[in-house]
Each structure stands twice: as C-alpha cells, then as structure tokens.
Amino acid sequence: MSHIVLDKSLNLFDFSILFKPIFEKSPLIKINDLYIDTRGTNALLSTVVIDKSHHEFFIQIITNKNKTTIRLFTMTDPIMTESVKRSLAILCLEIQKFYPEMHVIKSNLWEYLKLISYHE
Image (spheres, rainbow, N blue to C red):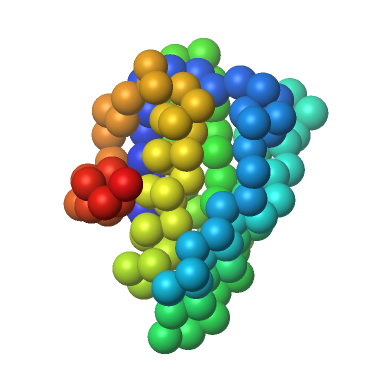
C-alpha cells in the first residue's frame, strides 16, 4: 500500500485550522474536507482524482507520539493510478509547508515527492 511516514507527531487539530482545500487542474486532484477523530490521532481527507477514470476516496493521516503516516484509507481503496499516488505526495508537501521540521523517513512514493517538490 502506498504510504509516507514523517518523523514527528502532527497535531491534527492545529493542522485542521491551517488546512485549505487543495486543487490541481490537470489531472484533476481535489483534496477537500478534513475529518478528525475525537482523540486527534486519525484524520480522513475526502479526495477526488480524475485522470483517465474517476476516483473518490479518503486519504488517512495516522499520528502518534513518534511519527505521522499518510496513506490511503483501506475501505475506499482506489485503483492505484499515478494521480492517486500524486495526491498523497501533494498532501505530504502541504503538511511540510506548515511544519518544515517534519521529514519523510519512509515511503514507497519517493519519486512523486521529489517530482512535485522539484516543480514547485
């Protein structure tokens, strides 16, 4: 499963205040709403990707005291297209924009992280 692990805990309540919907035009990637559990350890972000097909799914952020993981929510597991993988990397870079002290320590999406950060 595609995932990105950051080396620090993310305060999801603080991030929810900073978070603004993400929109890319081509291919279409929209990361809209952020839903947080009452403990503040899990969040779901509603995501729509339209490339050669239409995908609606949730990206999950799981955080504990040592790390934060970004991955696809397994109950909405979409077909793994390039654009779906890109949406995870975009969210990671958005988190790092607000929290530059957080670094990726593990991932199977390195090429997407490098490609996006190179173009921005």
